[in-house]
Length: 239
Length: 232
Image (tube, rainbow over all chains, first blue to last red; front, top):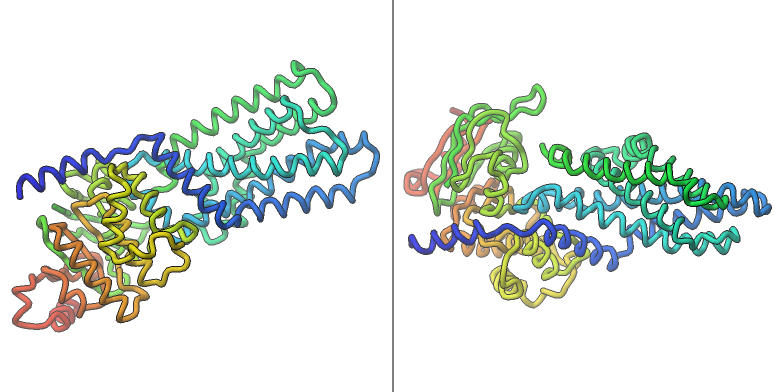
């Protein structure tokens, strides 16, 4: 009996999954569930395509006008579609009590943050990967440039980083669909402004060195948002 | 195994638990009974490390809360009235996910063992959203024991189950307790609690007002004991 309880104690003490493995488990779980239901991606995608089609009809056919509004239209689309995805991603965890299941795991709680943030980023990138070619065809603008794609990636990282933290907070309220954009847009404004500025410059044919300031700002904001979320996530999920 | 002293929990100005004392020996099956709003779920959430105590000392499996919460979580299995399962994943995918979160070895062997224990081996490839409420609750117990915990906490596990599903859940609960685990269960189903538990504690207005073992209760029935404890 003593041996049995001793071996149980040893077994429980050995239950310490690595940070990386637990984060990967959350990402794989989110991707498997999403690729089976397509609830989140389809909502984001339909919204994004509707926005760029409406802008396509609303704007002048003049190619210069179209080029000048491209970054604005793109980031408006990504920001609102991203909010839809963030809300859905966290409400899946909250509505069925699965967030408690995650919080019960013997891992650092920042694992949950990184797992969910990376999943949200992947969903955003998938939608962006479909929206960009459609936009290129409709607006006759070439968006497939490494520098521009790099800016979109950096902007999406910052948006998903701060959005995941704030959606965890808003998911605990009854008015989460309304509350998330109200909380998120003021906080994410530096990321959105820097992304629009850098994209605009690149599309206007500016040299890479000329848009280095907004790109540097984007990198700094990404690092700051990820660091803050890592430090405060434990308090956000605590009762 | 569980030692709670002078536990107080406040939400803003509202005090839910008012200096609660509670202890459970290893291998005991304690039924925590009480009216709605007595603080049973709040108390279980504190034991489960999901909520912080405002005041008081809580020790689970030799570790203090909230400072050693991660160590406690490795030894805990929690089942609530919600199954904590992902509807778009299959039964085995859900168990594999939780198994990975607990870092267990021999994953496939353990998943098969757990599915056999809860009687869902033939539904392992089916999505959770196709499961009945009773099947989901049985799998929820499988999820909670995947890492072979020493302490099990059940919060109203019979909620929403019909008679057949409740009987099947009884069997699963018995097999969980038979493996020498310490169990604390909240329930409003006195008849079921009487059959399963070895001790009965009545929680009312944030404190334990009465406690009796199964042997002590032989002289009277649980309903009479429960009513008397609430009157006192």
